[in-house]
Length: 427
Image 1 (cartoon, rainbow, N blue to C red):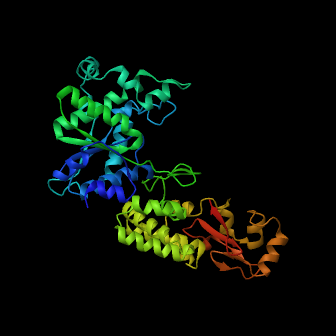
Image 2 (cartoon, rainbow, N blue to C red):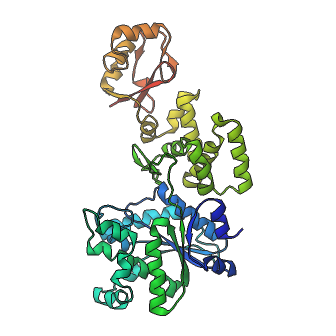
Image 3 (cartoon, one colour):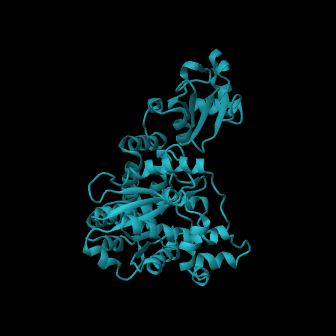
């Protein structure tokens, strides 16, 4: 199956310039996608473009990942209602290193003729003077042409307007395409559907400046079935960096996908073939409560982003909270991972010195913390057998807890009933 057909059946293709598919069918083509370096990690919103590049390379073509060290200093106005803050060069360089490390997990940078290649547009813009730019680039694209772009029209007609910096963005991105076409034989630029205007500015510049031919292809912007923004939760972006979004939270994000979204996402974000996906869909339709699609989706993406070991840890974390995995599992986690696991669970700080002396369990749960609103209620629940600490039932209201009972010398996990967790942190 060729690259375009692959995108079509997966529901990823949005726009394609005439002649693009013919070009791709003739032999290996070099093409690129740009990535925004405004953070030192990509988030799941970038995964659709990463998957596009994976399919491109698997079809025998050569992918270029352009990380915008120069354009990151300007800011793309597409889809934005306000101008972004400009980043310093030091911040950008730090961000570029983080993004390159992540892209290397997905693309093969050492496989011969169609090895992936990373480029930074700062390399060709750093010595490009303003006068040279407006003479060599600006004269080829008219203001009328630039004003016709939706990304420009929407901002100029809005309340905030648009600075000259952002207005010039499409020329800067257009020159990226020209430079890669001229120096790396890149005949195709790909991106999300909101990038169509910027991409065709590049094809137009190549045509007007050197009478060359270049092509454009865009993919669907990912949306959730309920209309809310993909890739964000109440806690913010879902990042690929485990320091920003833990593998457990990353896994849970995909696992909590709706049935309708899971049917789209499993085509977009995995490499499963059509037959495998149809088989999973049949299982899902037969028993929706088993969430077969969500589990397959979450497993595949978590392993590709974070590795098998972190996936297994994410599974155990889920089973710990909702199943019967012993408390010993927490010893396998760092303190930060324990806090992430219990994110959103009520937590209380107690004195490590006080715990060293020993604290009666009723006082622990009703005075030092507010797991129970009163000592009487705590005592009653303990006597009824409905309370546990570190997954062990509390036998008596007279039990005493000490430092030796701490997990990682820091945590006690209290339970009121089976599902109500409380994290007690000794400091």
